[in-house]
Length: 486
Image (cartoon, rainbow, N blue to C red):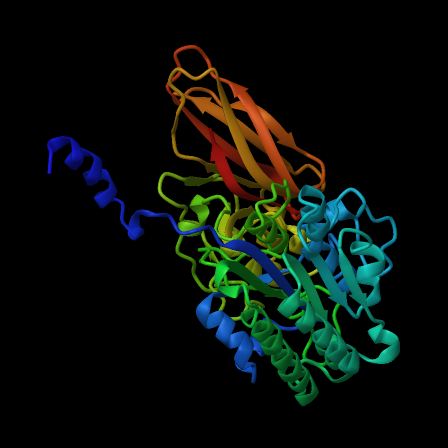
């Protein structure tokens, strides 16, 4: 063989089947909604199909808003799940849907349909208001029953039969299937009842049939399926929802995707995850699973209650010891009150909302995992320290390098409730110099996203940002999360 022939042959010999990229699989999404299903009951009950999904994927409990934002009822819940934004945007506060802004915040199915009309979109529901209000448009096919009139046990079965056929034979790019009988069992008999467990067992079997329908597709091997299960609210042990108890606010997200988030996802993440999987861009309140910003507060070690005896001893939920580089400074003149709230503390929704339910703490929905709280209202509950002095505490970030930068951007989530002389300020100190106040909180601002831009002085090398709550007695609170300096 000549050198020239060898030169031609060698590249051909080096191309092997392993070097050829496998064709990309077609993304498909199925979201299953179980109305009124409590996560603790699902994972402890006779639900083998749901548990099989958990074993091959991911699941976590999370918490709804409360009366400070919307009722823990189906209208707000399914609007939040399907739109990917919180009730302060979609404006559904209860089951009346009065004054809603759903035309401005369409469902993830409609967004997918608009972005790519070639996608096959489908919904099957037997709580009719979902169809009437949230899923008015955006589905190529919609199967709607009235479970309130016909009964949910029979209607759920019809929904399952229709969805099985769709998932087995249609393109089924983006699908939402709703099942309602668990909620009715909760209302009629309570979440601790055998009827509630039976309804879960029935819906679990129907979920198993839906999954088998997906796996029986002739094209299944060339498809990439994301299957998620979620709920709109929980139930009390005796039955009912709409209030602010942990049981009524209990929600969850189960997903077969590869993501294993370090912090539990929120209901708004369902729509964001579905759209990302379908390669549809959208700006929502939610994050696709595994993409929520990293938060330094989530690294702290939490302790059980000390003075807050209304919180179960098993709930770990507070510390004054911040993450590396963060400091809490409390004025020496501030009298001692409730230990957990003696100045800025790091806490969780489960701990903080149990200390004083139904005072809008539950509406702190844009915080995730661990967040920082200054709470003079709860601080004053031991010995009335506000009769002897004022609450005054400052949370300060580590030094951030601003060398050569024209400006510093400060982002954070803020949940602030105002009363009396209480004030909250955000200030910046460059190179250890004087504090420059860049934002004052002195009016109610619940579940806000705050973004500040601060000019960097010429020659400055570092900046520290401080959040101070002061001149407060038995007033309200301030929660801060996801601080980011850039």
